[in-house]
Image (cartoon, rainbow over all chains, first blue to last red; front, top):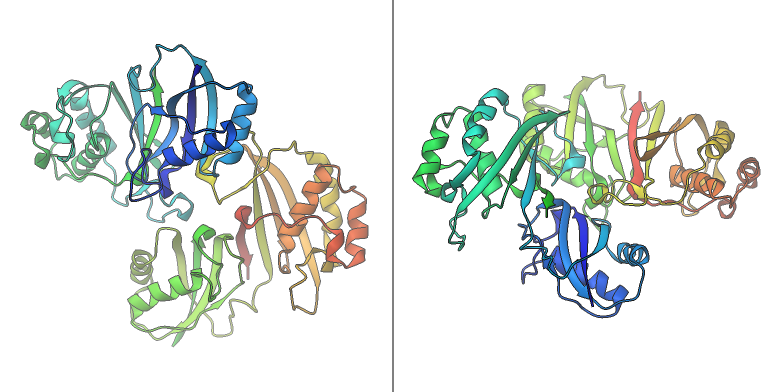
Length: 244
Length: 244
């Protein structure tokens, strides 16, 4: 019995998120189905994270304990053949039994993509937020600095969350244009329910002049969701990578 | 009553093609619904082309005769708001009554996209053909030259086609890599049912060594579909533009 670490990327458009749910098809069950077809039994998976419905991942990790004899490259090839085209198995490696896909996470990096043109791109449906208003990038960057460091992020957490400890550390927020797409890249030790989407929504309201740059600090201090901006939709959100 | 020429782009993944059909949602009916919501009545549309299920378009044209007073830019804005995110209205202009979206077509340009990497890209699901074999680009380019000019393309037409005249002229075929995507760009005066997909499928079989470069000429002369290569799937096909 060895512990295998899997790295996948997926287009979340047609899924109810990573974790198995009653009301939709989850990435997890589709991945477990594919692995079961290859290895012949259904194994338990432990993932780095949950993801909301329609959220994407460029690098998403999970581990499984398996007693199998198949070579890693063949295993990867066979599982990819069994997966649908919107999920890709990028890498498999054997890790130490002390490694844990969730508890060993040190940092997570999320990306949020905004298509900022008048004419939308139909080939990016579900992959970006379509946002036509003029972006005040300098204002957004100034406001974003207030999120850096260790804070209680209650104001930036969905009220339905049952997590007790809402203190998280944000290491960096980079905001830049990649062609016509505005990218928010946020790195932290962990993120609360909808935290990235509420931070991005709040920064867009700063750009629009609805929230003042200097109010971000006060909104954090309030520890109350109602003072922050709207939750932007899931379409533009990508779990970009995890550092172990 | 004026004649309006509309240019749209659409992601065909979730549609049964442009034209209205019983067994699925067509781009045409969705576009007609959106325009009806804006102008208040259902107008007839005349398009540049039919498209197969799942085929995309970067620039697709249709005309409508309308008696309306709304400004063009406002009309465009309102229709885009009424359209789903996988269809985009790019331009509207008023044209002469002698203009006809179908009969005035002089040239059509199609693109076919192939993702040629071992690791697939889940964000291109439905937008490319995933093809892992090594591409022999020089061989494909040599073979492609035999399609240039005026030929009877019966061998490259779906047998279900009821078109009588199967003579078409191909003006150019360009084949090149754009990053990891192999692009086939084909310009002609018109194309038969599945013609681009059969040409691309045949050229891939040339690359694979299943069909000899010098056999293309013979396959054309046979005027029999069974001698050409397979029809590649619709996912990678885009009506790129039309010249009037």
